[in-house]
Length: 213
Image (tube, rainbow, N blue to C red; front, side, top):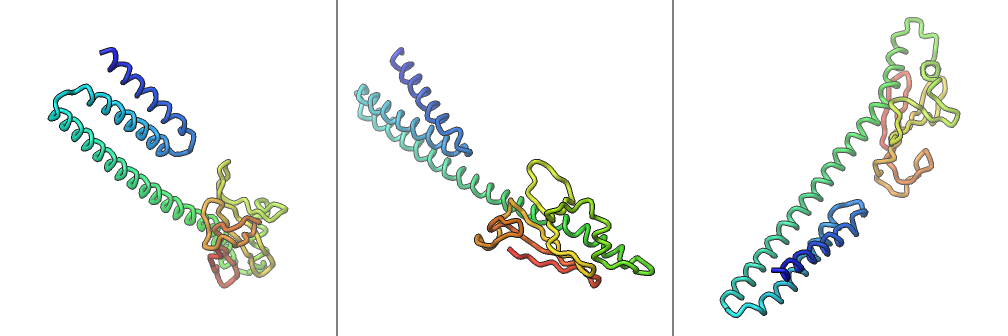
């Protein structure tokens, strides 16, 4: 009885150590795989020692077959769970990507369409559309051209830039630090590389959007 206790305790300790060694890797799967590998290797050694003490060939065969079946079942379940986890992660990343692009578009669209609406609502139209935009949002435009429109937080991933502004038009650049663009070598307006970028051009005729990367 004491011998079995030591075997169980040793297996539990080794499995726990293997699991927590890789705990800080950013994903639970390396820890799970490491722990499971150590556990099955340990069980294999334990089974080999235990089978030597069993005299009956029939019992030996039954125990060995049971262990193999459990091993195959466990591996199959782990593979299915891992693949499901990978698909779920990819799905969540795609959803996050679509939300990120939609939010960035809304950040760009709101001030541009408001300016366009105010411009066409003017009866005398004394001001130019670019001047109207600047007068409305001048306090949100920094000296280096960052347009601080929308919510700002520590994890900010969306940035707007006034790339060009004159009396007749405004060129607004939207960039995401989270989304990858179509071309990894693309030079973003901010100086970053390969990130998602879209531009919106506001004129008195309307707004034109174009994805640049």
